[in-house]
Length: 138
Image 1 (spheres, rainbow, N blue to C red):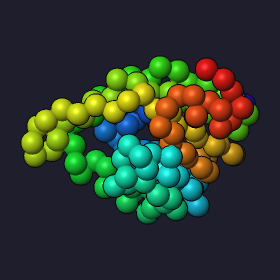
Image 2 (cartoon, rainbow, N blue to C red; image 1 turned 135 degrees about the vertical axis):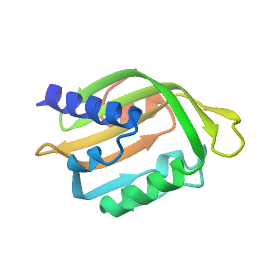
Image 3 (tube, rainbow, N blue to C red; image 1 turned 30 degrees about the horizontal axis):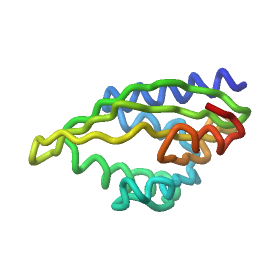
């Protein structure tokens, strides 16, 4: 099941790259918990816990409204039972109005999957903390 979960997350990330933001909701549990408290120090404007599909949409509206384009690299995807850790680096985004490029340090996300649906998503400020959250090491 772990490899299936990894492939599900890979697909979600690729949909995001293609700007197909609605496709993901087919794979998000209606009661999903979207936990962005781990980024309070780096992105305080959107840090918090969002619930359900409308909560996830609110998170993305807040984040994406600032940027006209976002690029990133996926360093690794690792399965750990029901969890998948996604490790990102080299993220740059360009201001929607200013066009100014900014960068975000490497970070991680943990997707918890049950019954083929993401039931919980958590973002972490670095790779190490995301891996440790599911009992893995760098």
